[in-house]
Length: 126
Image 1: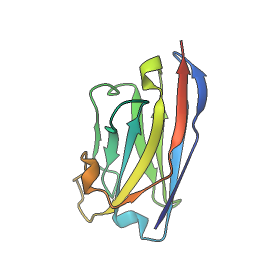
Image 2: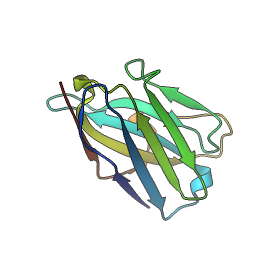
Image 3: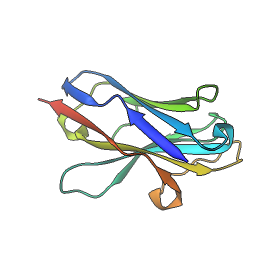
């Protein structure tokens, strides 16, 4: 299983970015997905998650209302739309995947994911 994340970059505060993560090597429609991030000197933290069907999503309090996770099962890709970016959103963003057949359940604990992408750097300048 391979996860290829892309879309990171440098943006000014208040701007937007969209991250993408393409999954190969397993059936995407039975794969729950998540986004996590790690800022310099800090531990990895949960950002957003979506269940296998796309019916259910969850967000960290720090990004709720600004970020939106979505998926296109036909393209085996999950997205993270990030709006109203703040300097504190600066981090390496990682997508993660795990097998799941739940119509509603998503995972916020990184230890529950089996596969991880390589990370994409998001830098928000003030």
